View 1 (cartoon, helix red, strand yellow):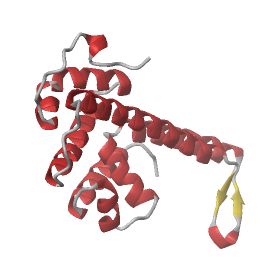
View 2 (cartoon, helix red, strand yellow):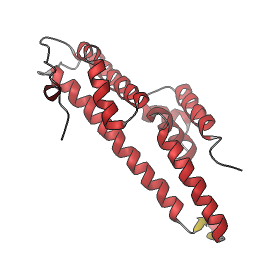
View 3 (spheres, helix red, strand yellow):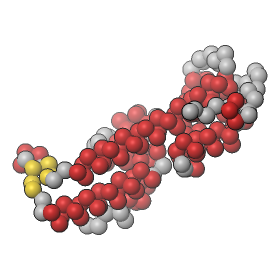
View 4 (cartoon, helix red, strand yellow):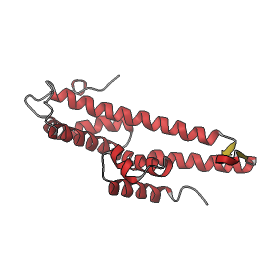
Amino acid sequence: MSITAESLGVEPPEGKDLIDVILEQKAVLKSVVRRVLGSDDRADDVLQDVQVQLLLRQRRGESVPERPFQFVWSAVYNRALDLRRSGKREMQRMEGIVERDEIPCGSLGAISVSPERHAIGRQEMTRLSTQLAALPPRMRQAFILVEIDGMKLREAGEVMGISPHGVWRAAREAMERLSGTVEP
């Protein structure tokens, strides 16, 4: 069941532009996103992402939709669902890495691991994937793009819609938060 403005008893204002709607409805939108994602920080990130996209839309001179109130609600709710789904996919990807009994080593093939080392590695990966999932979305995305996928800061910035320096800061912060999760 999807959450709508009408189901929460919120009346759509008339004659508002998209930015006005998101600013006026911020508290209600945040509570909806918090329910979907389970985090205040992630809810703030979603609202900020949607607000930036709406500002870019406005700067490009795109027309205001017929029903701006419903448009904003849909954009925010869909962005929250997208983040929840991408978080689940990332967890499945990390769990897939944890489940392997061998470590891929490029041209060397795969190296078998003792059962003890495998169990320790599985625990470390589970702990790391939990910590990674707990990071704010933008920070997690920067870390994955730069540290795991090996993208250059400029490329990651284009994907994320932020400056290379912003990507570097987010990836560095993620690294600092995650550094205490895996023992050497």
